[in-house]
Image (cartoon, rainbow, N blue to C red; front, side):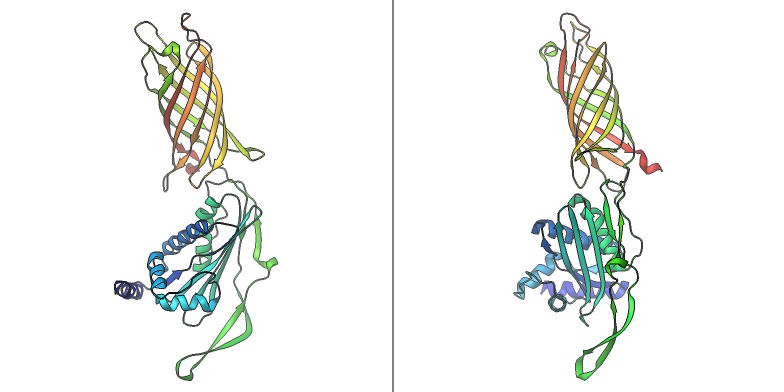
Length: 364
């Protein structure tokens, strides 16, 4: 009963705001996991809703409707099957498709079917070479644009540097092929069909590496462990400023950039004055990419107070939606040749902290 009332409310809202009621069937997966396919389908639902043209039936509600009707969803990709689901869900349009992976290339093929006529009214195709997380961020947005008739195509997310192959579709060409659809009481609806563009007309390859921009920010960290020479000292926060370059150089699968840090440390106690300025440079190596940013290793060295020193660590660059800010939690080990105190010698400490950086690329 609650599902029926919800469907009535959805229909009423769509008629008031002039939006189309649609449902989205989980994409068939080939070469990707069912969980990944389901996640991509969910993101497409959000992107279609954001176009402002559709009221999207919630996936949980669709699942419950199909469960109550004992409908077997597995392998449902034909127009007839999609139309049957659309009628059960009482929507005007139904979306289905496939997501596959061949080699290093992901491919998403989607279609929107009119539930009343059973005709495909829109198709979308997007190929991507890189991480599946970026396919979710950028690819589903592009699929939504193609299905909703929005012409603008963004080749790649500003946060990605991987090459992208985008399928750009010219307007469908009209043909003289016609079909007749039988409706109630013998009424015949005559509809002009269209043919899809050929492969040569359809594909435009874009292989562009996008610069993520330079960043500048502040840092703060706190010692988790200090070497024997510092064991009697006080554990104090380390503060400073940081700058970094994009991962603009690739060596095999590893992408590299540079960084620099200027800060202060102070582990002084009543017997030893262990403090000074930190000025170091680092080589940053992206060892794993996620949907939010890179997990990277850092290694470098420079000036620690009155001595030379080295540093090594790992950090995660977490980008924040809607603002050009990046949070970077990190762990780092630091060691110096000398502490400037002859009775202590070299010192070292392991610290955990956070960078808060601003992406200067957003200014240009």
